[in-house]
Amino acid sequence: MANNEGIGAGGLLVAFVAGAVTGAAIALLFAPAAGDETREYLGQRAREGRDRASEAVRKGREVVDRQREHLSTAFERAREQYQQKTGPATAGGEEPEA
Image (cartoon, rainbow, N blue to C red; front, side):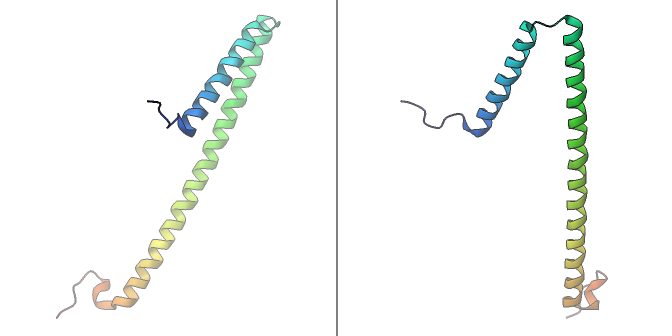
């Protein structure tokens, strides 16, 4: 019986990236360029990749910090609203007397 589930989107993306990397490596190995030129090209591409990765990390941190700030503000507002609804007796952590 055949498996109809397939590899999914994640598997397809991984296969595509692996194929692209393999193709690029083979193209570089068979390219008609001198060794020094190829090494310089690879070094330049590696530096560009590192710079792009650093920029992506920086942007990711900014997004995380912004989301953390939004969450903190939301929790603070919720706490204030809760304290307003329950009154000052429970605001300090004391239980109301029955």
